[in-house]
Image (cartoon, rainbow, N blue to C red):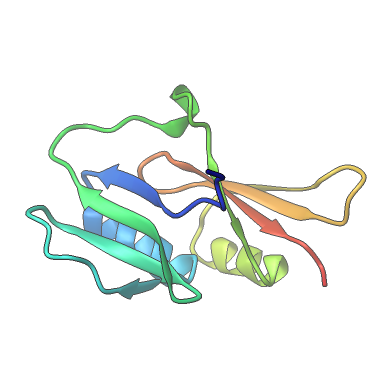
Length: 123
């Protein structure tokens, strides 16, 4: 048995519609098919794969900064354009370059306090 990659991430949220809007309207994921679970939620797709699952929860959720799972990362095709979009929506981020590489990054928080990393690798 070997692990081939990350299948998806799941975010529990009290702010389902705001979280959906963040990932779809700002970061560019697409809402897609989701099984008829007994609780509200969304499956959000990139390149035809459901990589972010959102589920509504009535319980308060905490920030990823205070948890063992610090953040997750997306590969993006145009970091500069993504930063323009974040600026247009008033979303704070920290942009940096990975030392010794040509990788550009940005770190930001989603509406639930989940830290998101955006990575751009030229070529």
